[in-house]
Length: 110
Image 1 (cartoon, rainbow, N blue to C red):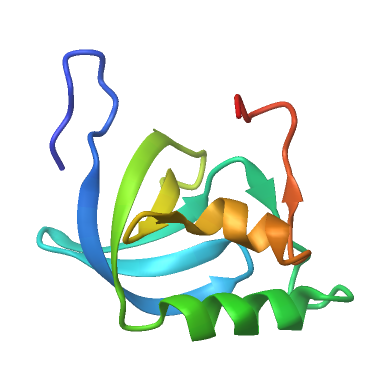
Image 2: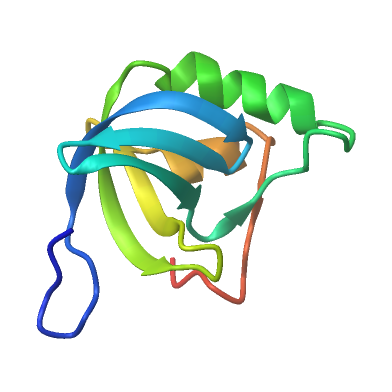
């Protein structure tokens, strides 16, 4: 994957091939598949109240769609952490606006 001089990933484009939960998706990049954690938000886990609804909404919104990833970092599980854009729409913010996830104050600047 391409890196900037600072060691951070640039924006990437790929197709969503799966939804793991309300804040993690699978994306097929030209370089291969990758798991992407949506930056600056937290959604309930699948076994928690609201977790299934969050995953279903993300699936309905993103499955088979081409998305842009504004990569923030890699987490300890080697997943990309990114702001996901569907066209001009910030999907991370959309999840919060829908009441399906919480904004993470400690990691968000906006």
